Length: 271
View 1: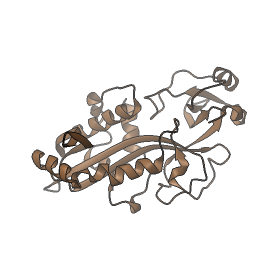
View 2: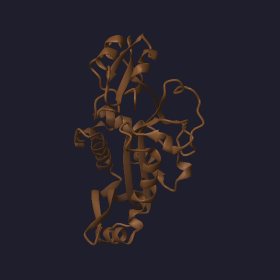
View 3: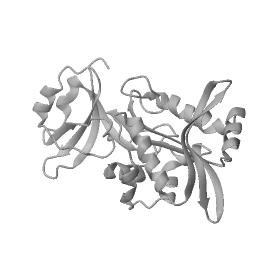
View 4: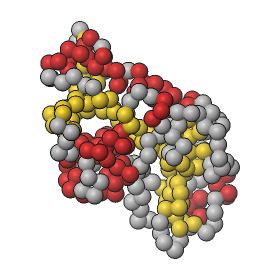
């Protein structure tokens, strides 16, 4: 878990800051907490769902910061008994002798590129129910603007909070087909050029993978840092993963150092 906390504090945003009027959460987190303070691990909670596990880790980082107070998490906003939105995190930040109320929305995403990457809609989740363009639009035009709605304003007023600092924490990996994944690509301008990158291929293409590496499947929720103990040679690994029915996240590992070289998805033939 300590490695996963470090991953959050040291990993880049999937998007770049110049296209959105929000603070990128990667830099913001490192301003409010000491990266080397491993004690934040004590407050983190495990969960089998990746998104909740990630949010628990973010929560532990926020609550460790001496700059923040009155932090509220997963606060639902109702209008006429109907939920119109939810704050991931809101609270107060004490910085440079002034108090700034903040609103932070966070998400961890792994998208496979099914086009050339010039459109955000090219990036699709492993289950095909999620797309980068849809997620980013929802975070920036709905979630982070919740306090601007009438119901959101009233909710914040009742808490004595008036968010002025809007933080967008969107981290993860973008995966490109194995043929092009390590080549320069002309990606959509909103994508951070320094994003975490991986590869993907279909199960009938796995022979393209390097024979000189070991392979292991990454199991949720441990898709952040590499926390592996079991490895397979290529052919044994392929045999174990023949005729899969869902994309699997794979770590490719150096045989000598047992460190991750890179990672990617193996998808079913009809994905």
